[in-house]
Amino acid sequence: MYYTYVLYSDKYDRLYIGQTDSLEIRINNHNQGLVRSTKYYCPWELIHFEVYNTRSEAMNRERELKSHQGRDFIRNKILNGRVRQLPD
Image 1 (spheres, rainbow, N blue to C red):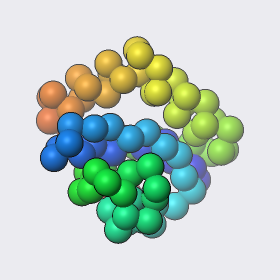
Image 2: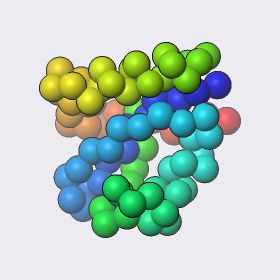
Image 3: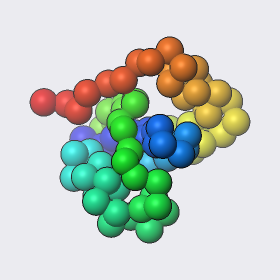
């Protein structure tokens, strides 16, 4: 399984969009400051994720979410307060 995910830093009002094959570990890495591009904006909150069978599909969706239209979609989710929990 591969995941496309969106993190939000409430403290800095910033978004981060990424993809991984290990969602829980990756989010922990972000919040522990182990990811160079996100370490200055901790803490991060998982606000959205999607599951895919291949890394290619997850990467394509990541690219879509990073577009202007994709970021608008994400902002609407944040404003509506829809937060998803990690999968079991």
